[in-house]
Image (cartoon, rainbow, N blue to C red; front, side):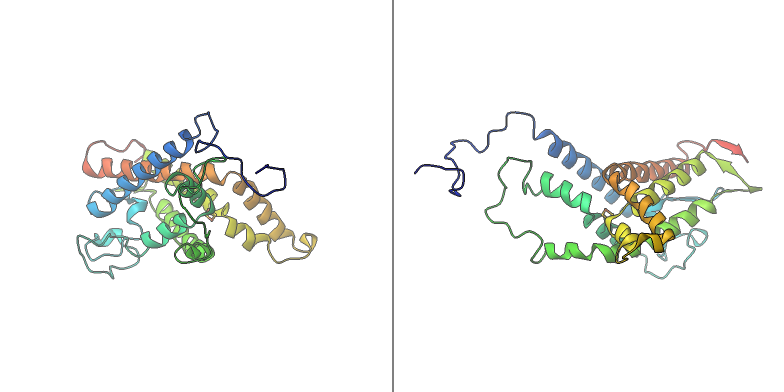
Length: 264
Ligand code: FES
């Protein structure tokens, strides 16, 4: 058969694809990064220890809000309403919501569709699956729930912010240490990620006909759009900042290091 430009048929090629560059590098780095983070986070949330520094009121974001009966009373601002069980993380109310928020995030979808699902792994590389139904059927139709998880993430980011504010403590009263810088930095980055969410951008600027008549929403939409362009960077940076914050608080709590104090 003669292949013409509009015949609809593909040229017969005896290779899977014609790419000769290292197209697999991006997906490979992504899958390593995601799996490494998930392994660390899984270890930490089931570890059920070294999540709190009492003297300075540092609470790791992986245990916030701490709602298990196993939580220390001073670390649980919202009550200890869940039973203490080794298979139930201390922050079992918030973690599934955050997990779903990230799992359904537009950027992470792109990342794991390419690197884990191979659908497709890269431009010009065939899909790893025989058929393609996109996000139109179960289970991937679930991805459309992202907008609802955005509201949950908003509430949890507010809680993380409160955790960072009330951590300016020392046994003598007001205090300030390296842990505060890490907690506040992490929260700022979490806001950058959350506020740059595609759903947030729609909440800020969607369904209005004239920006000129809604100057505040226009301003918020402009900020969200600015962050949205950098959403991939904040998606990765916040994975790092969450792990770093948790690791620092674990290290201080376990006595491996002491918090560097600027004001005691
Ligand atoms: Fe990434 Fe909403 S699109 S958090």
